[in-house]
Length: 337
Image (tube, rainbow, N blue to C red; front, top):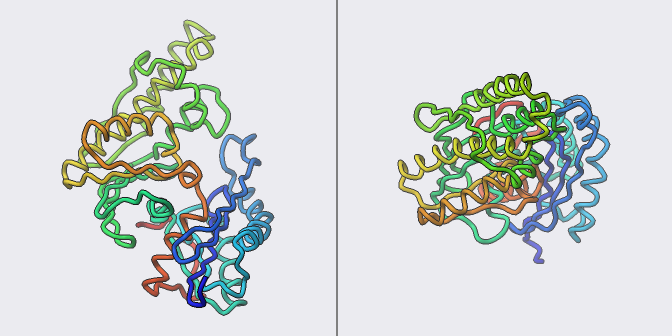
């Protein structure tokens, strides 16, 4: 490594994963993640507990990232952090640490939008999408269709008007009596079930927008009626219920994705965010792309969920453009692309 190399330490603390990574000239050297299990017994992320866990985990995670990178603290060119969107208490931990670190080392600060970073996870490894491409970004808090024109120029062309698809998975899982996080469990049981066993409504919104709150209500009333007649209905039909719910959610996602590809005439298609780890979505989209002649890009599982490698990649492109933050930067719970 030469003397002019760009070394960036990146920190991600937007929700319930504490993560740090080091990137050298656009090549991610590591991706250290500490997962918080404290939320499982509460059926969802508890913001106060999340921020406390970040305080406990952040210094060991950063230390491991620097040590395993083979780069000393003094070689770092900048420190990057997630400014938002996310849980305010969790973001504050990462932002405060990054500011203190940058001040102590006299190096620049780089703020990163968490949602931009999910999309730029596609540039961590080959193959990389060509511009322009359409990215379906699906996570616990966001569902967006984004037209990606360059590394730093992105336009949201459609998004959910209520629940994100990840929330729809988790809320439906709760109705089925599955523990948190329920989305991965629906995916697991769905592989053993019949996706056409039960029919749930496909919500159709104007333009390229989504709505996922209706399916949760439909499942609630459907289960209420079935359980009146058969108290063990869920246990007897769990795999089919999961498969049917997943089929409906994936259908809703892909109807709008197909419309976006047709409208913009783009054949480069990507998915990003935690729900892009869902095997039902990945498999169905892979088949659809083959039928339509799309070039499809799906990140590795470790880059789908919240991680600092994607923050590092976004920071690398911002560093090249000289886009640095001032020391009075504050976190934003809501932050648009």
